[in-house]
Length: 213
Image (cartoon, rainbow, N blue to C red; front, side, top):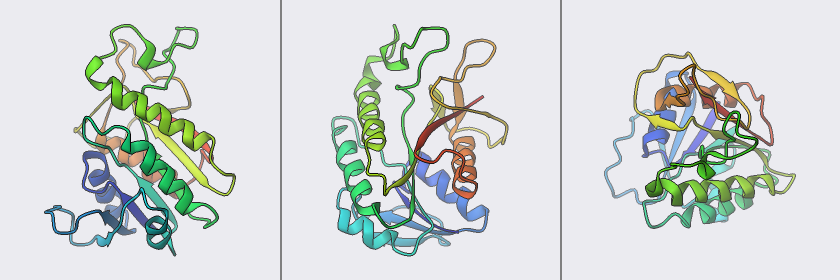
């Protein structure tokens, strides 16, 4: 498949690029500033563009089977996530290219809580609340998207860190996945597997799903 990745130099995006290449796909990594060191594999093609610019998105997405976005703004610039989402949706609309987004866990409901979301739950870390709320807005934008956008939104488990590529995890929809001890986690490597599985075999079109142990 021909897969383009926005946010390819990030923690999750880099693992998506690696997983897609390992599966034999043709991968294009999108950079905003090609002059900066990026450390991307030589097998990945490079495109220059900005997710916030619909014209850039349309140009880069042309001829692709799927566009993956794993963009994450730096702390203090969380508002940029909505701008990037708006640009991606506008640029993809009507092209027939799938748009698969790596989102946040904050909007997932906590098991046994009568609908309380993770970001609303007691003890949610204040330092990550701004990005969690930005991701909630991101999901709202996808859900309100034009019917001409074939989108999928992947929410990770509560704890998303670099780790092992095990290939052993569970999938869910709108409820946080927890283990027998109440922990919610997944490695970035396994999240990349879940995402590429969805790209290859679509099961959550115009919907959100989640992955966790």
